[in-house]
Length: 414
Length: 102
Ligand SMILES: Cc1cc2nc3c(=O)[nH]c(=O)nc-3n(C[C@H](O)[C@H](O)[C@H](O)COP(=O)(O)OP(=O)(O)OC[C@H]3O[C@@H](n4cnc5c(N)ncnc54)[C@H](O)[C@@H]3O)c2cc1C
Image 1 (cartoon, rainbow over the protein chains, first blue to last red):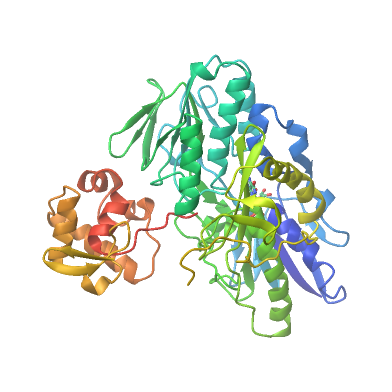
Image 2: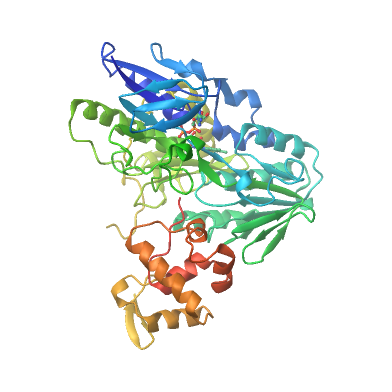
């Protein structure tokens, strides 16, 4: 019996277990998945919890509920990978041998990377919403917050779901308006990027919305430290931004497993071939989701597109055939813009987000890069799709793993 | 598009980054730096050659990487190239603007 071992039962690892179970011969292959958390969190829901749009219960389900019959779930903390011995060491000292390894350990906020972030104001006037606890704590804070300087902040790129901070700024605008205190709140958006987003067309679209909502953008801000006493963030160039409530997205880092294993980059991401998803560490190690160093967005939708290609490549690898080398970095993100609207981005390694219709070219019903109520409904439907289709490895109708250029207004086509 | 920098015609993109690195010279670098209000010193040149070297090796550049480079710390990087040091220094070095990940 051979063993395929998956590390991490988050979005990507769970999908892979579901994809691979039916296709790997059950007399030849045993599938094991290791995960420390008993709860599977729907992370996209973290942007809604602070504004009382989702309850905390709505984003939590038992991890094991999504692990298919016949796949062995090991509920333990992973210590490190020993690639030369084809085995993984668990924190309790036990070992798991593998023939093929899939790394799906994701990325997580690391506030300790910024001097002063975890100071006396942490969870008093400084909140992060990239964790379940953080988003609930922010909700409690906002419920009776009287107003003041509300600063949404990104510490460092890359972060997973890079549009989430913008969404929180937009939703905050609606939330305070509904509460009747918008005039008492000054919202600003502080980013290390040169604009609201890195891809120019989308950046322009977002900057337009920011202006419309009277949200001030402070770009090119690389935070050096947080001053807890005077409540301000200070960048390396000396620029200061003061806050009454700082909603920050700390530096995101890959799992400490990768660091302990000794093969990650500066931020613990695993060097990965961008077309095949095979790691550069060893041929029998593959990477999916936020754990890789691929130059595309870290998002659940990306992991979903990757899963199709990785499922194919695992089977080819087993048969000794050449791997499919065509993952294109496809990402597809709904962006909440407040007031019951959202916009939609569809892009890949080479094609920046542009306007158009989706998923059916020329028809829609969703509009790319334009705000609409339909897109918002799409975003809300995403939670249902996530629990009921994505994790279980079902295909999402009309949406293929490769980005399509049809229905998009593309200028200067190469 | 074409632009004349330091008496030399070079190809640049809409943000003013050279699109053909073979057109880069020290004089071009000095002229671009001048447009940014920077007088290049030995320290600047050390950073510029580090950036060019990293680019040649295909390394994706970030502020964090530069802070760990041993060539310069982040504080000094900001002092040398104020207001967005990464985008300004890469422009002067004649290499593409780093796409801080999407
Ligand atoms: C606020 C927010 C909003 C988002 N919005 C969207 C959105 O609208 N659309 C979208 O597509 N994506 C969105 N995302 C991103 C999406 O949630 C992630 O990209 C996706 O979950 C990545 O899946 P993954 O499996 O790579 O990582 P994860 O789902 O994070 O899973 C990694 C798993 O590895 C486990 N693990 C790590 N280390 C260890 C260890 N040492 N031992 C045992 N287990 C370990 C973790 O417990 C975790 O369960 C959002 C994320 C956030 C934070």
